[in-house]
Length: 451
Image (cartoon, rainbow, N blue to C red; front, side, top):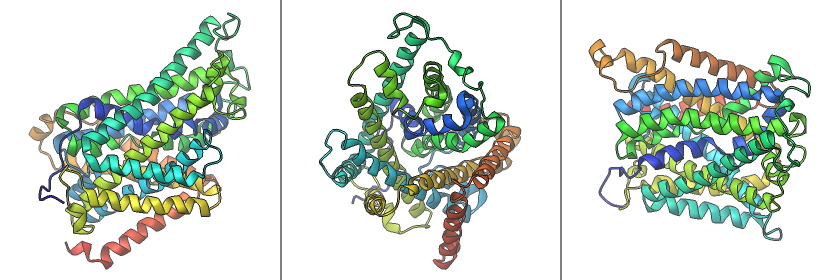
C-alpha cells in the first residue's frame, strides 16, 4: 500500500461514455425486457421513453454538481455537503449495498451462462473465476478497468445494433422471409398498441427503471476522469439518446417482427431475431453477449463499491483502512472487501430459492430510486448555496430547474408507490427501509455523527 492517497485520473472520454452505456445496457434489456413487454405490450416503448426522460433530468442534475466539483464518491459526497453527514452516510452505504446485491446475481449468472458450453461443469467454478478475474482487473489500475469495460460494453452495443439492422431488413425488405416485408402491424394487431391500458404502462415502470440502474455511475467516475469538466457533460448528453436508440430501437424491431404476446415464450427474443435470417449459432452468439453483459455489470459493481467505501472512509464514515491506495492508484482494500462479500453472495445464491432473484431486482430498484432522489435533493440544495453570479458561471446546468427536479422527484415517488402496490415487488419496500434504519442505528451507535 503506497503513501499516495489520491485516486488517479486515468479514465478517458471513450472509457466513460462506454462505461455509462455498458452499466445501463445489461440484464435489464437482455433478460428483463420480456417481463416488461408482457405487462405493457408494445406500449412498453412509452414506458422506456418516459423513464428515459426523467433519468436524463436526474443525470443533468448530477452533472451540474459533478462538473462544478468532480470528486470520487459523487452523490454520496454531495449528499454530505448539501444535505448533511447522515444523508451522505446513508447514500454511500446504500449505493454500496445496491451494487453488492446486484453483483451477487450477476456472478451467479456467469456460472449459469457458462454451463451452456460446459454442461457437466459445476457453475460455482465459473462464478468464482469471474469474481477473481474482475477483482484483479479492478486492482491493476483504473485505466485497466476502463479498458475492459470499454470492450465489454462495445460487444453489447455491436450485438444490439446488428440486431436492429437485421430486424429493419426483415421489416422493410423481407430479409429471411422470402422477400416479403413484415411491416410493423404487429405493434397494434394483437389487442392494440396498449393491450393492458394505462395500468400495464404503470405496472411496467418499475421494471423499466431497474433497466436504467447504472447510468448514475458517470458521476462516480468524475474523480478519476482525465478532464471531467469536458468529459462528464459529453457522456451525460449522449448517453440519453443512445439508450433510447438501443432500448426503444431494439424493442421496436423485436415487437414489429414477433407478436408481443409470444415474446419470452420461445427463448430470448435476440436469439429468435438472428435465427429468423438463418444464422445457426445464434444461441451461442447471444450467450456470449449476455455473458459479457454479466461480466460488465460485475466489473462496474466492483469499481463502484470500492470507490464508495473509499469515499466513506475519507468522510470518516467507514474504516480508515479503506482509504489506503496501492501503487496503481486503486483503493485496493476497499475493492478486496467488496469482492470478499461477493464471494459470500455466490454461496448464498445456492442456498436461497429462485424467487429471491425477483426480490434482488426490486431491492436494487429501491436502492436506485433512493440514490436518484438524493441526487435531485442535493442539486436543489446546491443551487441555493450559490449567488446569482455563481449560477451564471455554471458551465453545465440541470434541465428546467427547479421544475424539472420537482417533477422527477414526483415521478420517483410514483415508482415507489407502484412497487408498494404490486405484491411481487412489495418486498423491496420492506427490506429497503429496514436496511436504511439499520444504517441509521449504526451511524449513531458507532459515533459517526460526532466526526
